[in-house]
Length: 154
Image (cartoon, rainbow, N blue to C red; front, side, top):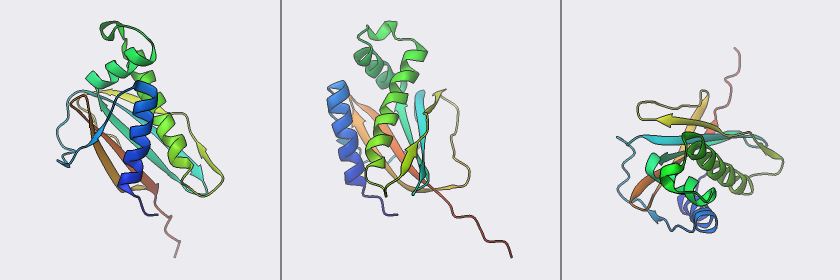
């Protein structure tokens, strides 16, 4: 499957604008290395296509998203609020991405992790592409993973 980064960026832009009222711009630095404490969420897609989307969002932006979504002061947003907000964003991304896929695909429930020293991987998958953007000065990334085909037994 081919991934069109501009199409993924457009999906993200539409979701961020409609849900949060925030604009995004492409991150042309291409830096996916050292990141601050972040909240990341993963959603799996199964059916005619099998893979996952992983959204990595700095805590500061997750806090802002939670305050907007749950109509609260940013300082009053709990870790659970941050996780719920990022889970909902990845769920919307997954649903919109699923619309680009062959028919009969299903979304899992999102899985969320928060912290500064972790790595995330989906065993048995390969990275198809990664899209990075900036929102309110925060670097956000979306990784698109596809399930690798099982090797045939000899």
